[in-house]
Image 1 (cartoon, rainbow, N blue to C red):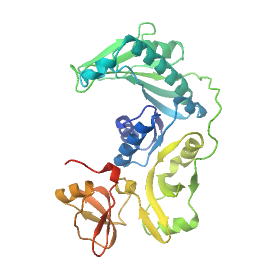
Image 2: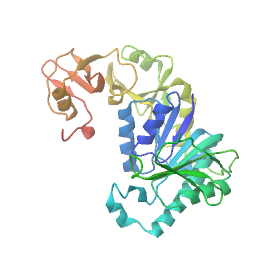
Image 3: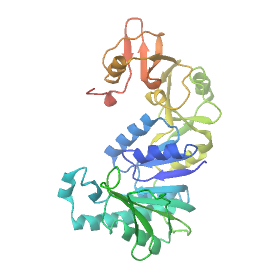
Length: 353
């Protein structure tokens, strides 16, 4: 409960959404350094609908500015990719022993930068999609012998197909997954506990709270008729957009914003323009309550037309309407006297269906 989790190399977002579901009373910080991959991450986190995820775009070294902040650190490190050879044989073309050595150095750098942000007693989950011991068991030895972490046994409940290994020096347990023995691609995973403090001399690169502002009383009053947020949710402004976050994590998110580049925090609810409330697409696909909005249930063909941003007809009340299919929110449409405007995001539209 109330755990704060960092998924350090998060794109495209599968691990972060899994973590958000598992820690459904916690907060997940989902980080991706590469801008193009970060955009994909934001899209997938948005579609998942949780208000308990913050997406950041930072180098791992920036997290030194948040010592002992996270209860769990997940590092699915960039690697040479040998575990993906079955899925993508072309990956073999770029593989080399030099690439393995380079990746091992990069993995150590990422871990050394991020570990100061892990709280004492916190857990590191380290993973790669590589089979090479230099990137797997040798990194486990380095984490134990150089970084002072304590290896942890994972209870795999005698799951058939998982191959248990041990690091050559520390004997830290690791777990290998091969695509001929399990459903999925090849990867390695190991867990460690942080029981000793690590030095972290670092000058924060950012000192302001990233334009996260509390709502004015006027905006709060204007928002009330449009969405029924409970006392467990708080709101703030970011670049003019109203955001909703769990109230229990307000101070934590402000602390994150003071040190990191935040690309997405919580759920974008919408914006006030004059006397009008313009709902955000994120609100339509979120877990937040939407009972104050009129909803229209579409059939399959209508839903596909809507997701293509094609013209479609539906009847409903004048103004903003939530489009749904099988009870799930798809997005917004605005019904006017002589037409229906489709507000599904242009960049997310379905091109083939």
